[in-house]
Amino acid sequence: MSNNNQQNTAAGEAIGTVFLVLFVFGLGFVWSSAELGMWLFHGHFFRATDAAVANAVVHFPKHLSNPAAAWPAPFSTELPDAKQYWCAIWLVVGIPALVALGIVAFV
Image 1 (tube, rainbow, N blue to C red):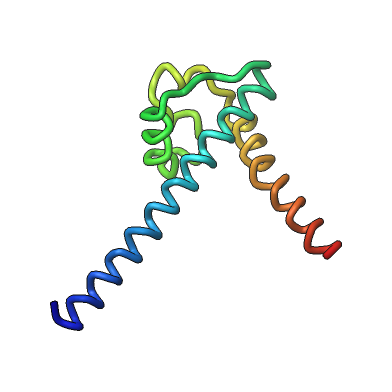
Image 2 (image 1 turned 90 degrees about the vertical axis):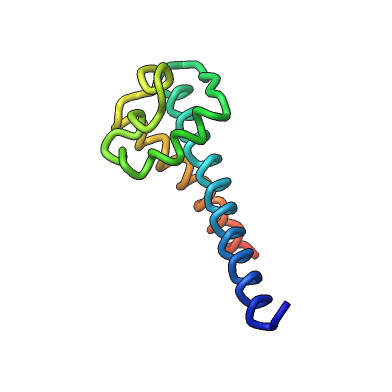
C-alpha cells in the first residue's frame, strides 16, 4: 500500500470515528431528553426501542420546532409538547454544564 493510500485510509477512519462518536452522543442526548421530558411532565418513563431512538436521532434536526415529531409512532404521540420537550433538553444540557463549571471553579 502506498503512503498516499495509507493517509487516505487513516483520514477515512478518523472521519468515520468522528461520525460514530457524534451519532452515539446524539443517541444519548435524544434518548435522555425524551425520557426526562416524560418523567417531568407525564410522571413516568417510556420504553423506546433502540431502533426508535436511532430513528429519532436521524430525524431530530428536521423537527427542531417539535422534537417529538422526530420520533416514530407511537412514541411521538406519547412525548410532551415542544415547550416541555425543550425544557427537558435544556436540563439535559444545562445540568452537566453547571456541574462541569462547578468542578472547574473549585479545582
